[in-house]
Structures are given as structure tokens and as C-alpha cells.
Image (cartoon, rainbow, N blue to C red):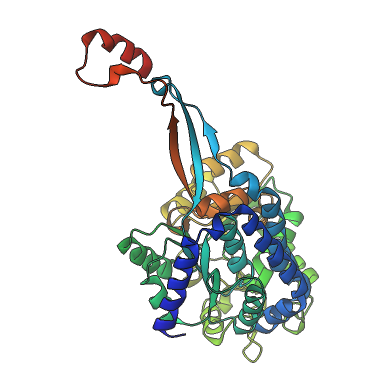
Length: 459
């Protein structure tokens, strides 16, 4: 799509928004219901695209992408009417006689930029929230997931005219055109480096943004944890989508006392979940591209691999790999792994955990496996992170009842459910003042006799 064509789409969306059609909540619900039906009707097509692009099985695709999209749609369809109502708030005595309320209003034309690792979930979930809030939207899909992109495009275009929602493909040049264009809101999911550029460009137009980035999310396992269960859940969350998950446990920090036991259980769980030869397992995914395959392979130090370590370049598959005796200076600890490689490090004192995590970029997620309530409280209150789980991993993002988002270097803002509606909504603060009563004390000339009454009102 050329720059002129993109600008034509944006102009048509601005005109459509100004028509006021999206302000009608019934109009929004009608399209959300239609989107739900379109996703359900095209599940096979979507799952086929995910398999071709990422090697995802049908079960994994539904559990981690399409099922969550349908869940978000169901949640929003049931509640958007309530969310869109004016919200009454208290009025100070000094403003007697008045009514005060917050009026939910859409921003207007929003840009949603999604990555390739969860192309359906991370494009449609924010779109659902944006539509529920009354906006028009341009959805920019990653060039790395072409088969899934075609399925998404078919679904979206069966429900929305491009003046309402437009789907755009393309690489860097399309991204540059979009982020240099004027939008009323930008929602970006992707790498920290691109997120910084989006933020910079948005600032030039004073455009508000949500940034969903990533980072090295630690998984802490102490000596009180249920080690077999911890290993089972860590393996599931780490190697889901071949580790290409922004909230995957990036590395394990385990108490020295249970180090050997945890390693043994992790090995056992890898074989149990993926078989003796994961590279031949049709339900085990693949790395998205040759470029990312080579990057992840370079992070594997074969001298420290205690499980896995092999790869098949012809299928872009890398075995679930566990690295032991890892130090914080190793290459694998210098960047977000975003692949099926799990480094295991040890600690002796809680202070070591606090020190390391605090001195590095704030992670998107934090996971703690422990039965020690005091320690859980210490880690979750003293460390900065986006969100997380106690005695599990990843699942905190699979709910519409609380926001998902980053903190510090891992992102800005959150979404899902009500929080998603609020993300794409500007709340106008309005005071509706009675014309029948007008207190004279606020007008000049001021009288000293009124000062006491004014102070009483405003204390």
C-alpha cells in the first residue's frame, strides 16, 4: 500500500468518525457480535494460518489465541453498554447546586500495531477494546506472519468497511508512514527499540500511546515450592509457542538448595510434554524466521546445555534447551531470549534476587514459586514489574477482569476488559450547574464577611 493510499484511508476514517455513527453503543455492539460470528466461522482458516507461520497446533491456537479473542468479545458485548454510560461522581459543596459526571468519549482514529508471535490475539484483542470504546481503527499486521494476516484480513473485512476498520500489511516503510501520520491514539505491541521510536514519533503530534513491550521476565523458585509442579508449569509456559511469548519465563532464579532437584524435574517435564524427540513432534512449533532462528541458536552455549541444544534449520525448530551454571555475564542473559532456551541460575539469599532484578530493566512479568507468604509479599511489593503469577506462569494475561501491561522499560499502559475500554477512552469531566441558584460570594467585589463561609466550603 502506497503512502497516498494510506492517507486516503486515514481521511476516510476521520470523516466516518465525525459522522457520529460510532458514538451509538448499539452500533458498536452490532459490529462486536458480527466479529464474534466471523471469528467462529473462520476458526479453521485462522488456525491453518497460525500453523503455517508458527507451527502452532489447533489446540494451542485456540487456547492461546482464538479462544481468548472470543472470550474478550463475549466479555465486552455483555458490558460495553454499562461502560459507555456517564459516570456520576460527587460534587463539592462549593459548587452547589450541580451534578458532576465523567462522560466516556472515544479518542477517534486509532492505530494498532501488532507483532508476529501472537498475530491473532495481539491484533484483535486491542481492536475489540477500541471498537467497544467507539473508535475507528487501522490495524497494522506484521510482515512475518503472512498466512495468518490473510485470515485476519478476511475476518475483519467481512465485518467492517475500511472507513471503520482497515487492515494493512507491510514492513518497515509502511511502519514509518503510519507512525509519521496523525492518529488520535497509538497502541503498539513489539520490541523495546521500535517502541521507543513509536513513542518519539507520537510525541511530535502529542498523541497518547500504549506500549506493550517485553523484557527478561524472571521466574523465582524457592526451597518451599512444590518442585514437580513448578517444573511442569515452567516448562509449559517457557516452551509455549517455542518460547516466542513476551511473558514467557525468560530465566529461572532458584534457591541453591533445590537446584539439582529442579533441573531434574524440568528435564523430566520436557520429555513428558514434548516427547523424546521434540523436533519430530508436530504439535511443537517453529521459530518465525531464519533471522530469529540464527539469533536464538547463537545464545545456546553447548558447554552449559544440560538438556536439548539441537536444532533443525530446515524446519526452523530448536529443541527445548536448558542451560545450567549460567552467570549474569553470559550472552543469553544480555537480551530477551524469545526462544526455547531456559537458563537456570541460583541464589542463596533473597537480597541477591532483589538486587539483580532491581538493578536491571523492569520486566514485563515476574513469577514466584513459593509457599512462604512473607517472601512472596517481599518480592511482589519490592520489585517493579508489569504483572505476574504466584505458583504459575503466563496465565495472568488470559483474563478480561484485570489489565495486562508493562511497567518502566517493559511498557506503558494496559488493556483487556474494562481496562481496555478505558485505554481507548477519554473521560470528559463535566459539571452540570443549575441556573436557578447562583451563589454571589465568588464574584467581585469580594467581601471580607464572606471569607469565613468560603473557607468552610473549601476546607
